[in-house]
Each structure stands twice: as C-alpha cells, then as structure tokens.
Image 1: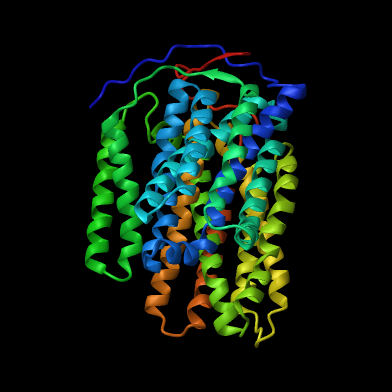
Image 2: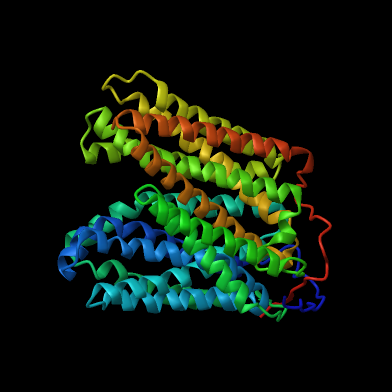
Length: 478
C-alpha cells in the first residue's frame, strides 16, 4: 500500500473570494465551460443516424459515440478532482478545457468511427476536469454567504444546456454536416481558455496520486457501467462484469484506506452530512433518469402521442428545474439545506407518482402540470444538496467533493437507465413497464428526500467540519 504524502499546511484564500470584473470573468469562464461539456453530451444523440450513414457503420456501433464520452467522463471524475488538489484547480481546469477543445477538433476531422470514438473519449477526459473542478473553483470565487446562489446558477446552466441540447443539435444539422456539432466547440473553448486567467490561482499540495488506484477506479466504473448495460440481455456476462466491478472497488478501498486525501474520498464519506447528501443524490438521480427513460414510452405507447409531441410534453421539466435552481440557491444561503432537499424530494416524488397513477386515458394534458411539479422539486433538491456536499468539507478537499458530486450523479443516472432496462425485460406490456418505472422513480426520490431529513441535525450552514486541517492548499492572487 502506498504511503501518504503529507501536504503542506497553507493559508486559505481570502474568505470573500474575488470581486468586481474579475469575479464576472471567472464565473463566465466556469459556466461557459460547463455549457460546452453538458451541451456536447446532449447534442450528439440526435445526430447518431446521420453519423452512422456517413461513416458507413451499423446504428449499434454509432452508439459508442455517446457511450465512450459518458464512460470517460465517469471514469475520470475522481482522478481529475485529485489532480486538481495536487497540481492546482485552475491549471487542471484549464488543461481540461484545452483537451476538450483539441478533442473537439479531432471529432470534427474524424474519417472513421474508431477515430471518432477515441476523440470522444478524449473529450470525456477533458470534460471530467471541468465538471469535477467547476464547483470547487466557485468556492474560491464567491464568499460562503453567496455560494448557494452561485451553485444555483450553476444548476440553472446545466438544466438549460441539457434541455437545449437536442434543439441546438437539430438546428446545426439543418444547416451544416455533423462535424460542425464538434467544430463549434473550438472558438468557444478558446474564449474559455482566455477568460480562465481570471480564475483564482489555487495552488496544489503536490501530493502523489497512486497510479494503481487510478487503474482500479477505472476498472470499477468501466466494469460497473458495462455490466449494468449487459445484465438484462446477457445475465452471465453482466454478472461477471459486476463481480469485477465489486473486486476493483474492494481493492481500491483497501489500497486507499488510511490515506490522508484518498482518491475515492473515504475521509469525506466519514462525515455524516456529506455521506447522506451523496446517498440522496444517487437516489434522486436514479429516479430522474428512470423517469426520463420511461416518459417517452408512456407518452407514445400508452397515450398515443408522436415522438415530437412527446418531446414537447417533457420540456416543462428542465424549464421548471431552471426556474427553481437559483431560487433554491438563495434559500439555501438562509435555511437548513436538509429541509429544502426534503421538500424538493417530496415534490419530485409527488410529480412522478401523479404521472404514474393519474387516470389520463389518452388525455396527456395533466402531465404538463406533473412535469412542472417534478422539475421544480428536482431543482429545489439539487442545488441545496450540492451546496451541502461542498460546504461540509474543507476547502482543500473541494476537488474531491466536486468529483464525488459528479460521480454520484452519473452513478444514479446509470442505475436509473438500468432500472428501466430491467423493467422492460421483465414486464411484457409496453404501457405498464413505463408506469411501473415512474412509480419506482417516485419511491426512490422520496427515499432521497428522507435521507436529506436524516442530516438536518448535522446541517452546518457555511461552517466547516472538523476534518483534518493538514490537507491544505496555497493560494495567490495572480
């Protein structure tokens, strides 16, 4: 087992963060980078048939253009957070943007599917650095009293980017060939790199990152995702992959146990409030993804709507989330986040339960109201929960907290997709399976709200828990 490297104690950056134009430029850099990563994950789906035809591959093969990106993203989140803590948040964040931008050029120039998939893997690695360190950097840009609002704007940007993805992709394809889906990232990435100089230069602690732990982390997530996707169609192969995932996780925990700043944040998970926030996040994102998969099938197979109309019925969800996120952010700076997350989980569960059990009888209009309730509840939950995860750890471990945030989200989304895959395999009715999925999603999100209630006594507001003070970062104003 590798020995931990003692980090140098260091002064934290000014508690009030940045100010004036520099704060505006720093926030613009962070949020624009997030738009790049989230939008790029959403615009490509609509182009898969076109990409398959152009490159002369089967539709099943073209799906790797999406799967490769998501897989690289989830594999690299925790290592990217650790690398940010080691080398400095701004350096790794900017390096991630640079890699993402260069890989976008590679995607635009791809002559074959393997080339495109490799370039997408590189995009995912760069995107992981952005997603794991963006929220950590916000903690150094804003003072604690404004951090909830800042995280709310971050959630707003993610929600709007996700909602706009298919529309943006369709608009680009209407006037240009598919490589332009990736080429448009290049000038935006250059702008982000230019504004990244305004970000706070938080220096790292120069601790060593164990390469064996990085490999075990990658093995765990690759085997977990592949095993979960394979399980429904090939039980034996799926079970073997899930066993490999379990062995890799056990090996990773054993190797990292006792480290002062482990790759998988075991030290942070010992904090009850942080641990419950992670659990609640996984539960709510599982329900969110399960419902996102179930609703189109319910609308089309059960309610007789065409694909375009079904898409329109789902638009109120992300829009309501976008409205709720900044409101929840401001409230979380004033109220206990556990109560806000519980209220959000309850609203989300209510919207999903109404969607599952309301006797619509081929009249889907009430679903619009249910989507608003669900989306508003999701926004009310997500922002305070993310704020709590960030503020219950020392600033020096903000990178690990950001990586864990993203990991909880992607694990939950993967579990939600697998849940619906299993339901479609087990339930023969194309109408009953999505309704059962919505009911299961309601139970999961309600459980996420209950988990949030359990941490109310431990809510610390803007205070920091008594974790090890030895893991520090240095900061300078340049």
